[in-house]
Amino acid sequence: MSGAIPGFAESLLRWHERDGRHDLPWQHPRSAYRVWLSEIMLQQTQVQTVIPYFLRFERELPNLPALAAAELDHVLALWSGLGYYARARHLHAAAQLCLARHNGELPDDFAALADLPGIGRSTAGAILAQAHGRRFAILDGNVKRTLCRFHGITGWPGSPAVEKQLWELAEQHLPQTQLADYTQAIMDFGATLCTRSDPACVLCPLQDDCVALREGRVAQLPESKPGKPLPERRTLMLLLRDESGRVLLTRRPPAGVWSGLWSLPEPEDHDAAREFIARHARVDFEASIALAPIDHAFSHFRLRISPLLWTNATALARIGDNDDTRWQALAALDEVGLPAPVRKLLESLK
Image (cartoon, rainbow, N blue to C red):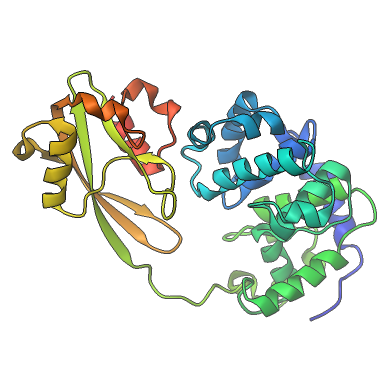
């Protein structure tokens, strides 16, 4: 591994000044709360997807005390559709910890910040660099890809040994000033030029010193994680609509996939489905309509959802007393946090 090459940060800063993104909503102003919210949303999610969620979330919960005081259901509803819902739960938990331990503010101490739920080393560095101009490195996916190509680093970037190399390089490349701009620059660079596929090497301000370009290995770096094909799981979802057009929702368990979100009931089999429906609604079980299966990919498995639809079910009055089961109007889906494929299915019924 070669040492850091002089001019790396300077080249990125010049490129950023000319071609970087300067109109992102969390840049004006770059308060710690706004940067934190954006960084959490941007984990594994593209900028253009995040922008409308960020604007809505900040409008509803404009500061850390407001976030801490909000009901988790409200936070999850604002997050609904962004995926990776543990991010929203961690955001809410971290806000409450800041209220209890840090006078309602994000700490500007690196160790205290990195210790909060959902933050960690890279996100803490991004917050301190962008909100406070502090000299801390970041190492998100865009930065890993850039450094692997520029330095010709082999091996999967998620392995401890390779990640240690990349952290050292990320810190060596830090400029002495303009830390907020540099942090935005290196993220933008990986997102818009040094992309995963079809990188724009001809426009790259670092092309003269890029090992991967010089050796013809741009397409091979960074190396992929060794792995197996994703396994497939199957689930049955019950879609019950009453005479008013409402749908029956149940809350997901507090742990596991989509934890804490509202979703459609998922019995283990048709016998369990019959028992569940008998407890919650009056409807002809045999009158179900089998809807087209829905495929949804997670990072570690693929899910095939088989929905069964009943119309004109009669809601049993006692359901209203159950905190984990509710009839929800289709016009009020925004009031609850729903998994993306379930929301899409329900939206199609309107």
